[in-house]
Length: 328
Image (cartoon, rainbow, N blue to C red; front, top):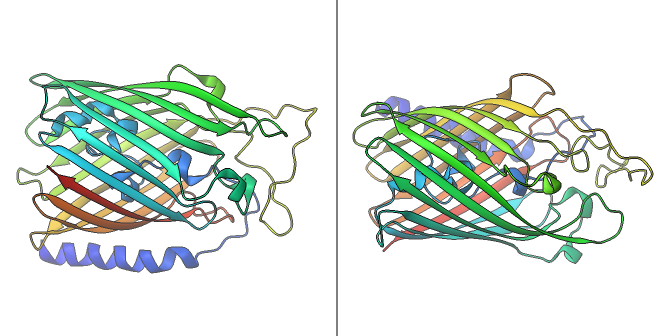
């Protein structure tokens, strides 16, 4: 077991240094990392884990998984993308007050939209707020989430602010002592804001050992794509998108369908290793890869990770993420 852990640690460490050096020849845009990558531990596990992730990332991935919290947790995630503004997510999860576990998350940015260096390659979002809750039973838990966002409308050549609410739902079933199944849908009610809050369907299974030192998952993810933010030609300097013809409405892009695997291993009592990867299972080529390391104690955790949402895209959507969680 120790040799496996050392190998995984070495892989994560190598990836941490190698990803920022990766380059590609593709000259098309991709969706900004902030729109598709949740906060917390999910950022190090390819943004998935419908039956495994239970921290702040569960609000988006599968709110039913929040039921696993029996403490009051406060946490934060800060992300430094290679392209775009730095952003943060702060959260609180209450698993003490009632049988229903509730969670809140706020997403903000280090700079306002006016401070974006590469405006149209960055997320057009100004801020987000999310509230989720989970209702457990003996073998099944269901969860719901509501999300509020403010953003510049990427469909408009002029600066126009859009404000919207979206809803999500999920369930998780305990198949045995070690195996569970989870499924969810994010934004099932508001297609008008799919560019900044794409509808995403997830389903997956997870295995966790009795001591909680090993957890792995396999997921399927189906996401709407944005013709205003993805697959747009870039200018010669690769720093801006070629302007859209305002008289022409771009065609809808096919949905992104991906198979993903990932997990986490804890060793040396406090060291936890995260990993995740995914690849398209039809349609346009897409990949994701991520990994991280964390120190986890009874009431405090600190984790660092790196992810690349689309390794084959030239605009370098690498993110370095730092997460802190405290239990009260």
